[in-house]
Image 1 (cartoon, one colour):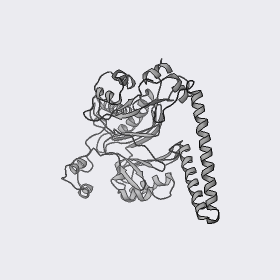
Image 2 (cartoon, helix red, strand yellow):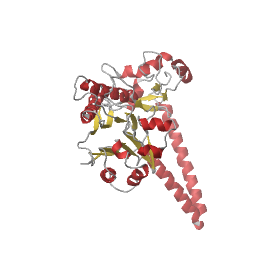
Image 3 (cartoon, helix red, strand yellow):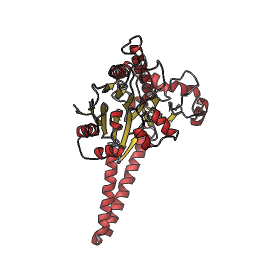
Image 4 (cartoon, helix red, strand yellow):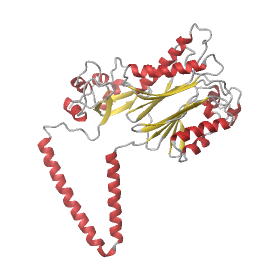
Length: 417
């Protein structure tokens, strides 16, 4: 039974069905509100292997365990380590058990933190982004068919009927250690964006244009999920079908939105004045003279305020990026300020109601930029590029060596004031 849950910036619904052919449902899916953020996961127990349903349930439970155990400041690493933890959980559970030996599961996992979406996967369960009537597949299947298509030996049409279309090349539980696919970039959602996590029981039967048609209609979120599953069942229901559908809202700065509305209103008023020939000249002159007087007065007041207050209050740069930071046991605001090359007053100004040791609550920290490590990058050269000390850069990112991992998000702090 699907149900819709509404949160601050998004609402979601989940639905799973065993389909029309399978005797049991080997899919598992869930949502967790963890100390690392909002987590959504879909797992598809591998058909043809022993106890695929056991593997899927174990993996979904492992996600909750890992993400609630310890806060990870780097969400990309949180995703990667979480999937690896789930893999080991499934692998060791099956080891030495004849009935469970060889069980496995796919996984697609997303983490929503501070209005950004981080994701990773293994197998052919997928993540889609639907924005402005365009459906983008964000994950790439780990499958024999996908490899053949990339090599150019198979067309998309041929892949739909190929006898090896159900064979996957990567899954949890088959080996003790492997590297999942973790996207090096986060999705920054917009209002009315949809995210769709699903098992291949949906995508093997429903084409992208059919998904778009359902998502584009004014159904409720629950109805959209139900129609996706029903459509797959009407087309055969040859596999278990699982869907998580997320819709974003209230994204963005309300003050900025209000400013935009105000600007549009002013422009509209000017246009109306111009259309009224009898009073247009007089009204326009009054408008500009009044506006000039108000702006001049406000600028003078602002300058007087800055002259008086500059030495008493820390000023936040207009180009600063604010990042979340979970303060660790034993740390103080002073420690954090030193770590990120800022000062206690600035942090207190950004976090007026913050109390130490609030579990799961992030401290707002100002930094210069977030830098994604690319192939060939060198930590010393990055430090030189942004004009900061190498030790400072390592301290801000909790690095113990100069070795960098491609896709890692580096925090670039400001120079010490």
